[in-house]
Image: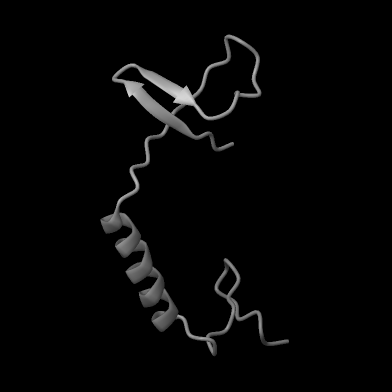
Length: 70
């Protein structure tokens, strides 16, 4: 589940929508800062993966077997 919130101050968040959990539930919050640098990293990583694994690259199973061969 992904929830969106705004930081109100150093100890409070304002949620954009209610949490569909009962009162007293415990949550783990992961902070993800979105930045131009992060977006650039994702774009360049994607480009490198596309170059490394082209369209003619066979699909492999977790055991390393070529799945395109009968």
